[in-house]
Image (cartoon, rainbow over all chains, first blue to last red; front, top):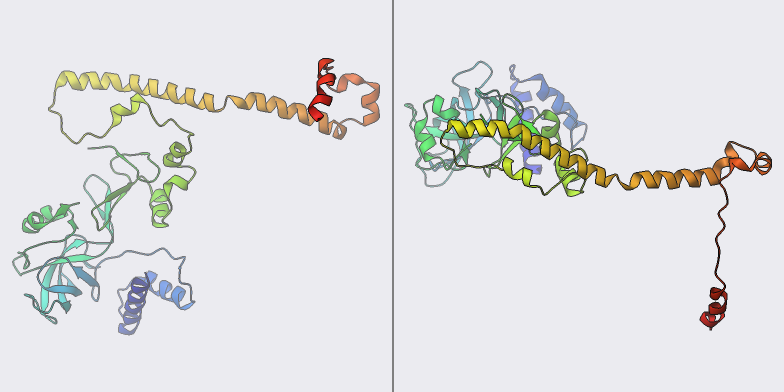
Length: 168
Length: 168
């Protein structure tokens, strides 16, 4: 919990210094709450889109461990569950297909922000996770860990679904 | 289409309602409304939250074991569509509901059985102790109908002979 707090705090700090105009006003109010020394903040944690500077977990065996979003390919406000993003590899396994600093495409397979389904219900996952893909949309790795949503079928990422262990 | 049960309060989640939360270990939590979802995020245990069905079952307020619950068990095998079977099921559902409701009412009545006697005893005690709040003691002595009649208990003579023996 301390780690997530620190990462959240640092992310907010970076956004403040970066002067991002499209960051939600909720972030600014949250940072003010945090500077007041309130560890268990009363402000509800707002789960939003995956945008520039969002750090995501990589859940395949392509070699990368953490990836930072550079661009959300579709959507003005950011990427959601099932969308593709352009990302920069921030942390990687020492001997993997992908090295640190490489610019890759990735598909969002788990998003903390809820997504509406066609039957009217909403789904949300615990974290933001991503599977690295090449420009054609084929996954770079050969295994996918964790659960993936079946929204990927509509987005034509069938290969990822076949590799997945569990479909949410 | 499937009618699910809310993980927190055990009410039915109809299509188009609620949020489905997929945890990283692939366990799916369904919530009927944001009240249950927020309580879950607060890490509250439904067995300790008074208004949930889980609490009521654990504390014996509601029926736990009954043959009518067998009909609602989740079956993962899809049944081949049989028109007669479907028709019979649709006819049986209201009957089973009626039986279950009547059994639950019986359970509730059993639980509340002692209340009437308890209420009488408490009323009697209150009348004896606090009648002075309503009527002055001098008035009570003049008009004995306001107090409860004194009951005369006959003590048999044999007991007085046994007592000195018991004291020894």
